[in-house]
Image (cartoon, rainbow, N blue to C red):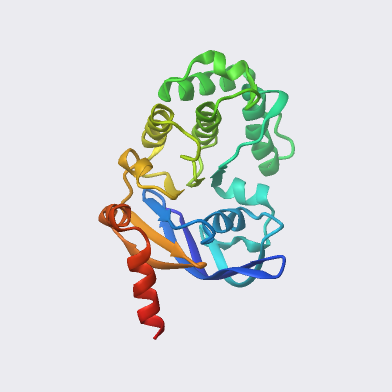
Length: 258
């Protein structure tokens, strides 16, 4: 049975100010969803809340993942269940190579399951890493560089995709991965996501723009405004939004409120 991320009537505040005002959404393994909306609508707040950022206070609702209400779990516990967040602005960690970072991430998961675990053997890890880099068409030298240190915007996002490939989550949330990327970098990152997508991975792509959806093809598109998902549909919804902007949705919402 495939895992599902189910968000039920989620209300979230930051420093006492309500940001999310009743979000409902289900993302299953094997599905690709796009979440779109104007600046300040609550898209990134949703992603950080799902992963357990302490600045975001849940005031009502549930987040169920694989049958477990995860709101009481620490971020690393949520990750071990199979959730992954690709950041909009990945942090540089000078002195820690991409390979060491990924090996430590794998070992942390293994030891959480079994404190006696000695960690993944180096030959097995090297084989796994090369396998994933080849699948993503990445230069092997990338593994020896310090994580995100001096990386271009596109390289940072590719490093996130490599983490996703190695850690094999059930559901991946991509928070404005297209932010700051030129067309070539966008294409490379999108190709990586498309290679990973399949029956074992569900993806929630958070974006302002249609352009990334030219490369990553969602089956479901949702529009968020003022802390709520106000419209859901298929891929045509993103195209309609690109052509007409958000005004038609605002008019529709105003009409509903009346």
